[in-house]
Image (cartoon, rainbow, N blue to C red; front, side, top):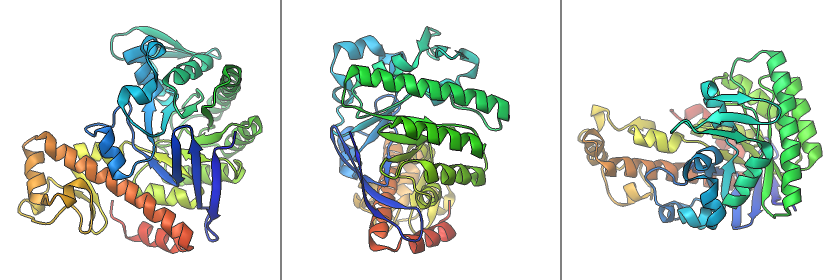
Length: 372
C-alpha cells in the first residue's frame, strides 16, 4: 500500500510537495500536525482545528495507554470517535515519553517495563503491544516502538540501542502484517549524532519497506548543526516515494530549514505551549511576548492581515495582554488559536512557494529575517 504521492520537487533544494492518502482523508505536504497528546490539542476544540485548516493531528500512545487505557479502546470504537476529530490521526509510539521517564523504566530487547507517571502502575511495552494498542486506537498512521537516546551519548551505547530499535521495528511490522489491517506504519530512524549509525539504520529500515519513515532522537539538546546533518544524511537515503517525518521539530525557522532538507511532516508543542505562556508568532514582528508593557495600550491585532479567530475577531494586543495578565482562559485560547493558524499558514505558504519554483528564495529570506 503506497500512501504518498510526490507532486513536485524543488530544483534548488531538497524540498518536496506531496500528498498523503490515508484511511480518513488526504493530507497535503509539507504539513504540520498539531499535538493532541492525550486526545486533545490543549484548549482547542476539534471543529476549531478543522476551521484553522488542520488536516491531521497527533496523539500519544503512552498517555492514552495509561489513561483511559487499552480496555476502553477495546470496548469502544477508536480514538477518532473518542475525541470527535473528523480527520486523520497519527499516534506516536510512546518511545520519547519512555525516554523522559528514565527513573521509572527498564529497557531490554523484549521491550520496556515502566511505571505510570500518574499512579505508579507497572506496564510493559513490547513492539507487538504498541502496535496492537494503536490498532485499537485505529490511528491512520501508527509508529513502531523505538528507543530514544539522550544527547550527548557515547558511540557504544548508541550502537547497542540501534540494534534494539531495528529489532523492535521488524517485530512491529510483522505484527501489523499478521493483523491484516490497512493502517499505515512508520519506522523511526535512530542512531544518535553518529552519521554511520544513522546511515545503517536508514538503509535497514528502508529495506523493510514501511509505509513511511520518521527521524527520531532529535530535539533532545543537540546543536542545530548536528540536527541538520542528521536530517540531511537520512533524507539522502530514505526512499523518495515514501513520506519523511521529523519528530518534535520545531520553531518556524526549524521547519523551513528542514523542509529545505527534504522533510514532509512535522509536529511540535511549540505553538500551543508558547501560546499558553503568552507568546504569539507574527509575520511582521516575529515572535512577540504579549506580556511586555509595549503591548499594554496597543490597538493592533496580533498580526496584520491574519484571519485567525483572534485577529479576525478584532481582539487587540492590549486586550489579549489584559486577559493573559489576569489569568483568563480566553487569553490562552486566543493565543493558541492564533499560533496554530500561523503554523498552518506557514505550511500553506511553503507549499505554494515549492509549486511556484521560488521556495529557495522564500526560505532564505525567512531564515535571514524572521525573529524568534
